[in-house]
Length: 336
Image (cartoon, rainbow, N blue to C red):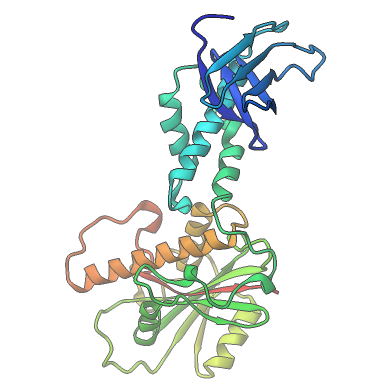
């Protein structure tokens, strides 16, 4: 038996135990003997090489026997990938909020700890994302699977976030967003995005308001301007709810949001926010990941509003949020 055998514990892609020897060879669990010792065989045992190398460990992971009969080249690159995947998986399990995990960040942290050749991020990125997704609650596959009540439908201030659900529509709105919508509705902006909608749904529809002047609760607003594109269903629905609403259609995405001299708006406020959402969501995100990120956005808006009303807001906005609307008021997930 070789001296100075270095052992690392890893696992296969299917979650089975795997042993790494001297950062060069991988051994998969074969069977357990009556004395509780375990036998591991080289991963090349079931290949054309039929490698007969094996290692036997007791229940304390101490080496009882090691037969190094390898008839193939060392596999340092393959070993490094397995070790990196295992370490990353363990780090992901330690995180109580998987929604906050950034795949590249956790890869960088683990790769710096490894003392062997580290694989490229691109080779294990999909595996990292799968491990992260496994930490979420079971994903919803249809509208019927969605609960009316859930602890995930609470904001950071422990307020209700989902306010409506019927056969083909879910509406998310916090009390704070309802307050803004009630007091600052002279200009309403609406647009939909298919990219950030969950797989089982059709569209994520967003309505927003313009907070141009604070503390307007005592001011009567007689005219509501509804800004949208030429999708007829949107304007028809708006007119049905608000018969006297003033529809402002988008004639050109480069100049459509300059009515009433609203100087703070981007060229297309609603589509700008949808583009921002597309940047922070994967295509067709998991349902609970969508809810989590939307709640994070709601909390950012709440804190932003509190600072602005107190006159303490001085932080420069991010590039893609520069001059955007202060709040996302309604989030509708259209399921048909």
